[in-house]
Length: 427
Image (cartoon, rainbow, N blue to C red; front, side, top):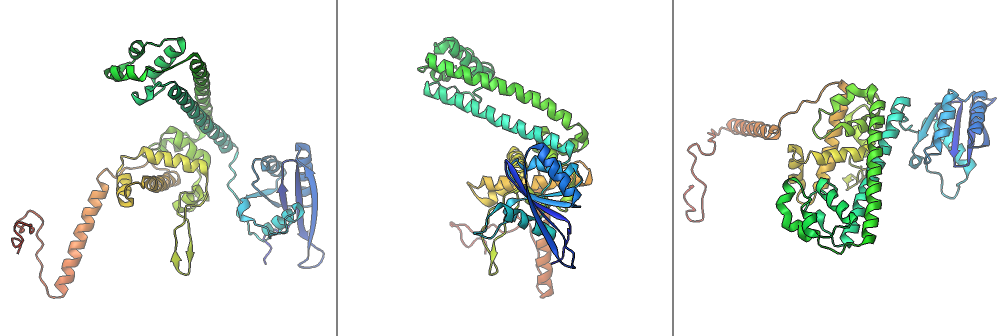
């Protein structure tokens, strides 16, 4: 096979050690020499590894994306000016029964030598900073949601059903009732009087919802969950400021992305953080959708296409786009796909709409242009144009056969359709 990278290294990464195999040209034509060496994963040892590779004249290195342990290895090699290819471990399957660290690094080096490995997308400094902050913010939001759910479980155990009446348990009214319960108030009438706004119309239901067996132990647990919820809310607000500072260089791109229906500020920041806003690495929208895990899988055998789920992709971008798709649920495309897929298949419609939204985002970033909405009646107008085209096509086809057809739209003098009471009326 053709040698693409003549001076190459393969690295098998672990938490405490890394094995490095180097493949270099030999003394005779076509000969290859292989050298393997082990290093510890301390930063000083990794710099020694990078210096050793640079001394051997290694220009390219490849390694598996093993958890987070590859991060310091990547940075040490990048600082030494070595081109690094970080690959998906699923793309490098060893022969069963021959699993050893030395053989792993030698196999990686040989694969990369012939250009058989596909590199993963490793963001540059500014994008990496934005990505770290958006991902951590997502984790904190999930933790805050979990704290709210734990609080609801405590109230459920106490027989307090505020969330069965109020749309938000931790809204202003719900929070005031919970705080009063913690403070010792047990009178359902006084608790219901804490409701504000439209919730005051449901005073009787709130009195029933606040009549439970709330004890001191329940109050202690509610206090812990509320404090944790407030702490996470403060940290999310702090992270919003850090994300805004890291996203400042991409402000024009984010401003264009938020013109897409369903994509808000946070989703636009996630799109930029995960893709880098540079669409030159994704030649088509289909490639970006496949990379995000929003494209249908391929499973064809003997000329038959079988059902295949979407392959694994970038989970952070996929989640953000699916959430944006649910936000566009009243949209024309979501309604159209939900009808086509049938009742109970709204999740499939959400995935399809997420694919569409990401394709639109690709075009917005690729061509540096705002999104222009085609209108809520786009599909109706398109169907009408298709109907008129089909009528003309069949009319011309019949005319070529010598049959003259006069098209009469419904309601313009056409005979009524037959009915059970008068089956022969239409004739």
